Image (cartoon, rainbow, N blue to C red; front, side, top):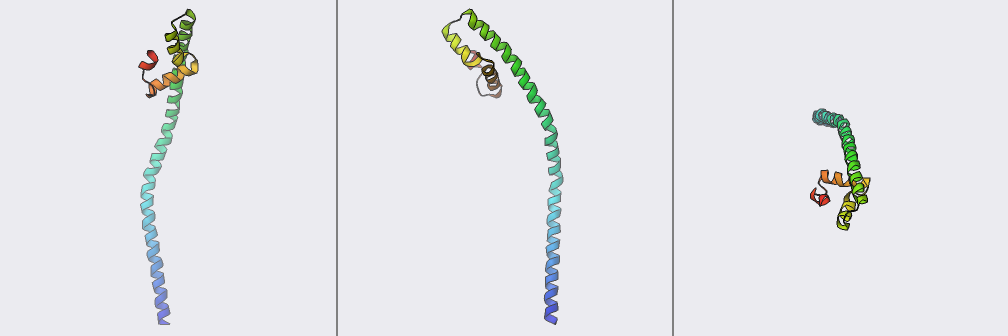
Amino acid sequence: GGTSALGQLRIMRTFRVTRLMRAIRLSRIIRFIVPLRTLIFSISATLKSLFWSMVLLLMMTYMSATIITQGVVDALESGISVDLEHSLCQYFCTLDTSMLTLFQSIAGGVSWRDPLM
C-alpha cells in the first residue's frame, strides 16, 4: 500500500515538473514570436514598394534602350567603319541586347567603359 502511494506521488511530481518546464519553454518561444511577427509584417509591407521600384526601373531601362537602339540602327544605316559597327552591334544592335547592356551597367555586371568603346 505505502510504496504504491509513494510511487504514484513521484509520478505526479514528475508530471508537474514536466508541465512546468513546458510552460517555461513556451513562454520563451512566445517572447520571440512577437518580434518575428513584426519583422515578417515589415518585410511583406516593403515588398509592394520593391515591386513598383522594379517596374519603374524596367520602364526606364526600356525607354533608354529604345532610344539608344534607334540611334545605333540609324548610325549603322549611314555607313560607319567595320570596327565601330562590330562594337556597337555587340552591345546595342537589338532592343533586348541594349536593355541587357544597360541593366548590366547599372548592376555592375559590365563596366560603363566597355560598351562605350
